[in-house]
Length: 399
Ligand code: SF4
Image 1 (tube, rainbow, N blue to C red):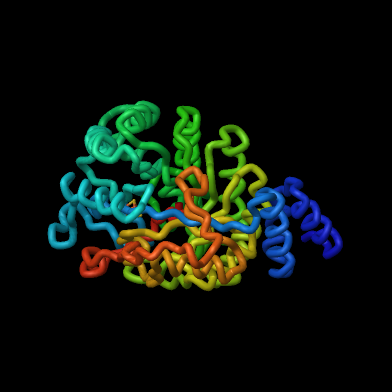
Image 2 (image 1 turned 30 degrees about the horizontal axis):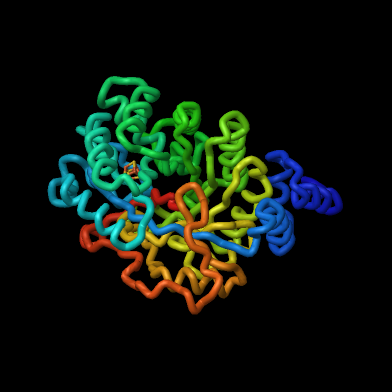
């Protein structure tokens, strides 16, 4: 354990942009006062975004949950249906998906996020066909979807390498990976909650292949399923090591486990304080990742606001549809004006951004705010009626 004076010197070094070790990060996480962590993380954010440090961003996107059929049966997930469960399972057809894309464009959305189960019949060909159709019809929509888990699954179904799967879906229309499926990368907590998923090392290996092929991604962390503080830091360490080699992770998006409707018993959600500590530590630890995203969907709007003072520079998406986290108990909804207001009330100027974080519109003057309140985060009745849940966002925030 680091002495108090040494803890302060580590914090000072981190605040000035110096690299901290995983051990130092764990000491800070365990022992530094919350306000000191937040202050240091905010100093890092302000320096990184000098000139635009007064801005906090959001994006308008649509999650397209294409199927809930899944063979992976993660214990924390209540979104999925087993392939034989015809009462619960559903799959959207291409027309339905294209209609959702059209609505996204109409409402000013710039991004879609394909997110669904590991369907036993969906190989690379399924994604090629769907991504090509979407890109042909809506070339203006950025397809920021899937993650290493889906790549591993589709490659196995089609009998090809992960590299070939990535090349093909990228050529068909995938722009970047949302980083789904990271959950917790260290072996013990990953096996405890997602025993049939690929290992954390394999998840990172596939993301590294993707980055090498020019397909960037975000990265996520699911927190609150019983992992230790050391395992949270180890998760970040594993991502930072890959990022040192590839530079392909655009953002880190921690989000909290939602405890309803799944098979993880006796787990309690991470507290607000734990979440804010993670946001701050992430900003201090990831000297090589540009963006830290606050996740208001799972933590609530007020905590989202607070996260902007603990190192986050982005609040992720106003999601036009989200069936996954919402089904596991996340009940927070918003429309564009609410997100603009909450960013403004946290002392920042809101800006709508692209997938690659360019500012589309900076809402400097409240008198110029958009008046179209059709842009409402919509929780589909399909999943709620089914009592389902799937905390794999990307992400949220993710995405
Ligand atoms: S989290 Fe994803 S991979 Fe795991 S069971 Fe749910 S849908 Fe399947």
